[in-house]
Image (cartoon, rainbow, N blue to C red; front, side):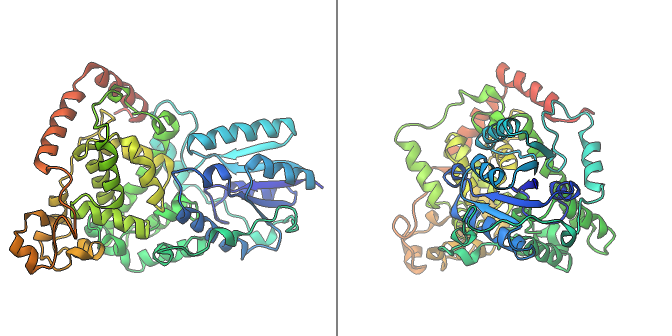
Length: 484
């Protein structure tokens, strides 16, 4: 008897899962399939932390399923499907559409060709409120609301007619991908159950101060929702989170925080939609008028890039943010924006030099959001506000007591705030007093902040006025912004 296969990608859950529901309704035995695809394992956007999170998510699902109902492969998708087809015969393939990197787009073309050759019907479900091939935003907001308020696509997994695969068919141990590595215990744990625990904890109290804490790199770790990784890998659907927010809308004392969270949930699909509609932004500025923007090159470029990647720029808020990311995979939005701004404006490096590194350290790396946001903060869209963050000012305002900096830069632990945010200003006597040697224990600033700010500001505003940039900006506004 032929079967229905549910191809899991970034939708690692058993609830509000339309492909699973449709497969269950097909009347055929259902098999879940996930592949740790070599092309993604080797992709520089990804890191061991991502595959550990995926492995944990699969283990969470597997624990609630009958033995053999999920097949996990370490081969590419077409090879995996071929083996399943030879063993059972696949009548239907169900999956969510993927708004991913170019390599997953090319892979989907191969899967489509394979399905056509083998008479397998591939049913794809839209991802959230993203519309494939969309060329304008005229009715998109209404569509988003309709999707997010629609009934969830749930099925009773106890009533699903599950297929059963013997381990010998495609032996692949999920445990191979969940081996603890350095700092493994500092990362969020993957899985649908962990996701719900995090979301419920937010509404049980953590989230009340969300609106007042989200810009602080320390307070955000507690008071932000912390569900971004669970959304990125599909342990939760955006619809599930949004409907929980609506269900708590009248919670006393929470309105400002819920308004702030709701707005960020709206942004989620908005930025992924931008990537879907303009996927070339993986490789070039979305505003092609910035293709020739002058950038630092030669031997100086890798020197600056390495310092930025390793958290050794001499600017404490930049370095603490990068080291926090390396150790935990999490950083609040304001500090992420500062990291990109510092790379592109103060260091004057091409955004493409840093985009894959940040993807690899963000546990919640989501291609559409990542590339859309990265270019916006890099100032190469021509339609967004140009923000050149001053890391010293950010430190003084968002980490006034120096708690965040001292946590991740223990070599600066004895320096009082606000001096800890500009340690290069310490006199030799002060350095002796605070047990730190600037230039040895902690690096000198890699650039002159005032000079780099002035040069970046002059360049960006001059470039923004160029005819090619303005022409592209007009095109982008028509494509990605809803009409008034």
